[in-house]
Image 1 (cartoon, rainbow, N blue to C red):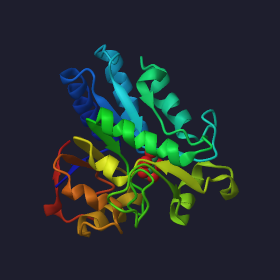
Image 2 (tube, helix red, strand yellow):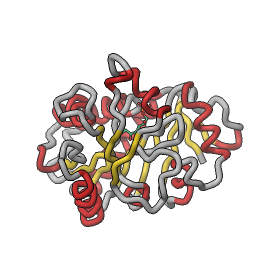
Image 3 (cartoon, rainbow, N blue to C red):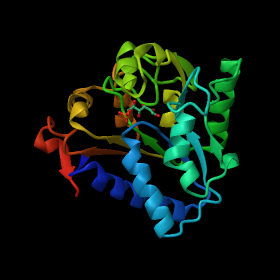
Length: 248
Ligand code: F6R
């Protein structure tokens, strides 16, 4: 079942409420974090609520989903930079509470192995996800095995073109990234997949119609027992009425 919200802002408000509740229930919660334009209103609202309600984040830990290879953390399009700008520098979260894949290591393979082992050890309580127009979650492109752990991936042409909007020209768009694997994502106890915007309406319809298959990575979430599919009206515009419930 998809839950539909009139705007990305009303969705963000609802999701922030859930996040704040989960943190209050479990102060040492482990969050899985996503980047991308979908997450901007989510973090915007979350930061506002944290300040308003004086939420204690001192025991929270986090794991980010992915990072481009070749961009240093201070590069404006790196996901390190995005997280600092949209969340970390705005609230009381210290570097030692945060995990992001280090895509600038010489030995990417051992960095990936270490990242999955840490995820496995700490256990993600709540994972935030966006989706690519081709159905990717994290940077797990169509065809990525469901049993994959954190790994290096070659970005598909579609993803590079979609994300090219943030770069001056296509030659600057990285070709590779590190991403949490499908099995790392699936190990989270609770997941929220957030999909907003008319440009994702066809993706939502494809996801709704898709069987669980590696060709549509996000379809794996249909087998996860505790995933919220949160969508705005624009992204839900091609769905049949019986596919969703309107929330706010
Ligand atoms: C980002 C990530 C990606 C994005 C997806 C959608 O950390 O893992 O899967 O969620 O590419 O990006 P936006 O929100 O920019 O459309």
